[in-house]
Length: 142
Length: 405
Image (cartoon, rainbow over all chains, first blue to last red):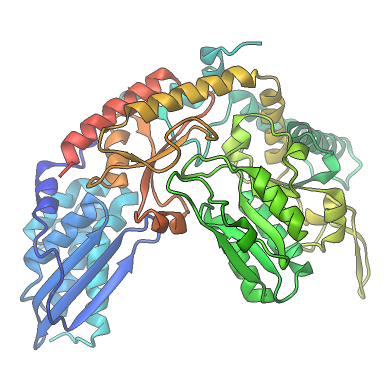
């Protein structure tokens, strides 16, 4: 069977950290992956320039769930610049296996996805949704 | 005649490939079927000995290319039981349906109606939405029953006298359901409407008696019936092709061109602007000539026996999205396993060498109908064997144990 589905990745998906909806969200965004129809909805609440809380709903595969869960576990307290850096770090991991300083430890579980180009979008969809959500609400880098 | 599975499989070089050390178990035939060696040989032979453009040159190579291209058209016509002059080569099923939507669509007026269905592939939905936006026609939609077949119970209400065309699938690429044409024909006749069938999932499972279907347009792709990519077919009655304006303009489709005006060639050439996919058409012809020689009674029995094994052997928590029996279905089987995403299933089974398809299958309205983002689909072909099904069912059990909540 595929080496993609390591225990750590499955555990991260099943942990579903901050899965659900956020009461009194400042902003909400839903994005689809046109290739497979997967869908991510993110709610965020901001305090000044930082994410005060967030919640996610995922109608998607285990990789997408695990990425959303990693965001749920790591994004609170971060700024747009921090999220941008984390997004770039996970892209670098998927594209060339690079584990840079901005890569959240939880994202290292995605290293095996590098060899499966058709699945990169599954990991990136929650990040793209969060980046767009932050940009959409006019958040600026500190 | 009889059916020798091993002899059939031996014709397909790719079936001896190993994936990660395991034999390839190819069950994604509804997306693209594999190509036999003799089709590859026909392509290679044409490109290495007779490559030339068709219908215009008089040198030896052009003569050979034109003859081979015409022979391919005749072979396809025999497969459908129609006249070769009614066979238009296109790029694909999508190309064929877009041709009808543009060309037949140009004959429609604002307020005319086209009936489509929830069961269809995007290629038989989007061109009609584009026509609606271009011409001001109205689209009406046939719903789908819980068993994945078209719901024809409200035909009288949906197909009105304003209806000019019913465009639906012959066999669903998701549920495998075969459309019941009897009520559709009656409704179309009562309304004076035409019928277009998307035959892409029907033609890989044996010759089609198109005149007996009683439809007006029939569209399909070569690559799902053991031929190359890039070649498709539109069949339509000659009178209809004559009535319809050209689709694309350019070389090959004209009679005379002046700087003021152009007159057009007779069908089918009127609809084949530009240099056609010649080698691909010749490859399709080779595939069809072979398919015409096979014992389809035995092959159908074989395909459906394997389909029954899949239906019976799916994990107990799986829900089949389509008919659960073999009546009016082809060996295209979609299912949902609650809590386990289709892409995760497909990825895990890829590790066993099993090629499946997961996702919305270019049928998002149908997924919406069933409240799903996607399904997992196993689609069989004449070369599928018991070992393929063993690998599928064993892999599914392991995947569910690994991933189920």
